[in-house]
Length: 278
Image (cartoon, rainbow, N blue to C red):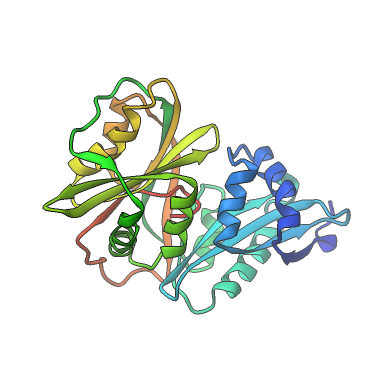
């Protein structure tokens, strides 16, 4: 495959089937529906060979003017290390403009992202497996439509950016659970169909115990089902392993520019929407 024959175009719906094929070749679990979710809140770029086959992808998900995430960066195995990934990244960064950027790097992508000015901010642990028996926590309940504004506000505090479009999409395709204290929501979690089964995330709470309870709420009704959780919290990662969700991989959380100070917030994001969306 000749690099000089590769062209890049704006990522449109007509490229989704090719993107699914590319991600499956890379060993990623994303279904067509998962790609549609990410593309629905993103802008992106595809690389096409001379036959029109999708041989590279990247998406830029803007969260207002606060920041953007770079995700779904995939290059055909026969083209890796030949500048295609750099072209895709340059164009995705151009789409994001002056926003600060975040991403989750794989080992393969780490050298490129460092060259582009990204710096490590943490680690992400991917846990998944068949759910074992978990007792339902008494203080967690299903969210209602009236809770969405409060959930969005908590997510903004925890994530440090306005993700109202993403939260609205997750409410459309998934389910939320919340913890209430004194008639106030003090934590939430979301579950939705993804890959081989379902994924829990984002999860935002004020304490690790509340985060565990929010995840346990969904696990308690899914004994024997396949579940995935992506977390940057080592304590939650250890707990997930104890409850049958094995550590199977992860990535390096990175940002550009590197944060100059720690985010000051009441809530903590204990689990990501997934490694693509943050």
